[in-house]
Image (tube, rainbow, N blue to C red; front, side):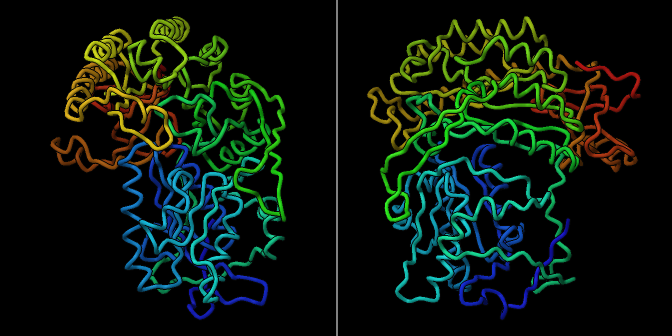
Length: 544
């Protein structure tokens, strides 16, 4: 579905007495995790419904959103750096609206304006439904000399904001925005203007994302309170979406050609424990900072039961999920991975440390022995399962002996892949007050040692697949041309890329192969982070 806009600059922003015309382009810069990518799609959906069409050209934008991550200091500073560059753009275009959203916005609130005075809106993680009104306030402030120039919304929301994929264009604008819209006499502008070429030279921009794999958030927040983590403070307490809403969203994705979904949550294993709706007690019709909340608890289905429901959706071929918490991974979930055809034989199970002493200080809720028992059970019921994990090195008071235990756990499990990071203090996280800080130079030395060890096991796992036939979901053209040293006729052939069921990237030559197909690929070569192979006949295809 293509959208084009009227780019007559005299009409943009013109309005009747009680209506703002939202006509322009939006640019969204996303930093951080998969959940942030999903949230950015929500933001794009909201902006599209009120007339801002997504663009990948920053210079084209009338509204710029930086969706931020605060899990590490580097990611936070990246956000401030990007938003800082907008100062000159706003001098050239005073009507440009700039927004910080996400975890840094939720964490820092009004303090953000001290570093970025030209920013217009700070929007927290639960303020999506109120975004149209925030934009309206900014637009009105540009016309009123005495109006407030900086808008902050980091309030809680009574419900999880839900919207269907924006290319499906459901009429959710009224159902989700009506309450907020009425308070500001807000009206969604539903008509669209069409031009062949706009003032920026763009032609028939098509903003449907043709990816065959999509993220779907099934829950928000976290109740675990690991001592190094700020998620409960910036994303709130754990709440689950209803299974009906999740299934509806995935059916829409399937109808649009999506073949694979990855279910997202801070701890998907605890999905469905409670569906919490917060009844906000208001004064003068507005939510109060530090106000009183009443919580309604409604039992949902369990996570394995949700997987079973999604497994029945026509068109979806593969189901993945992240992230799982080791203390909550049940036998029922292991059996679901084993028995449900579409659930991939892959699991990301963050361990963080191999030392019981450090795990206790992290408040992880399990021991090294418990983690290894779960790994053993997984491999008993799900042979050849692809396993990955997260590690933190240099946690306060981590000794060399503690670190050696982490290395030993890696040798014992032999993960397919690892995401490893050196510890850094985060605001509000209890570990920031712990004694026994590890020297930064020592942290980096340990991190490099750990990554070097894991590289050996990743290569070993990949090498074991050479000579096998893997079922590969074709994601699209390979961005990097491989085997260019071969004969010219081979080097110029189309190269495609996709993933195995266990999540490994595979590149291969392909003729007459379409995105979204599952094809058999004979693996010829293994590399540190990918595989290379050739197509085989369909009747020779083998799933490993």
